[in-house]
Length: 242
Image 1: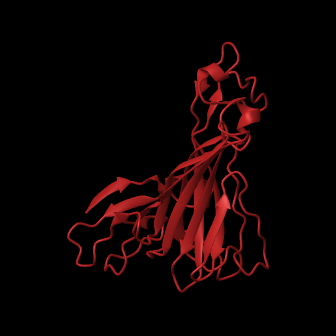
Image 2: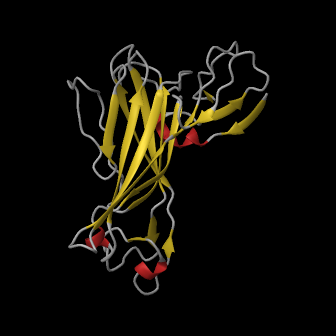
Image 3: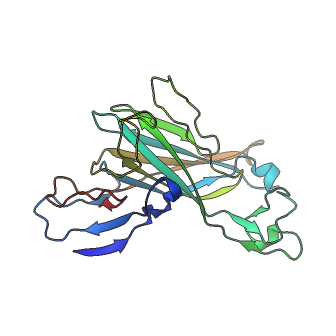
């Protein structure tokens, strides 16, 4: 049995560091990495958001990513997600376009003496999905639905910046609610394959033809299937068997 570190470890204080276990020669059906099958872990490798492009950088189209995720199970599922924020910032923390946050695309966006440096941080959130439920939101807006909603419990965060470049990862965890005795999640991954995801990136330039345009492109999230039905005991320390 080989062992390697997996990127699911970025769930910070909400879960222990995850480890991916490879199970060569297992007697059970081998899990796969695919974009067209339900999985325990789904990864959206490109999330971009720049809804105020004309204001923020003075040129170029507005950009938004619409994110969709579906629970294909006939059971309620708790889903834990985190954005990996790779947005760059000026080393002197300021520029003409975004004086508060100093976000940038290249060093040319920074004020004199500043260098555009890539970031690396995470922002996580958890929500509950009803059986068979699809769910969608815009990256720059998130989705705020609290207790009592017939759809789900939990607020989906917006990306942390007006200008954002990064990725999103979501996986199934234990429990049937976020809070509550005996039913709330401990954020421990479970060996189930119920999630499918898609993302659509929109670029829109306002104005009069021929300068105005809308460009749309989409992709399926990459699904990494969990190992199910294995005689190998399921870990209880935040390890995810994939």
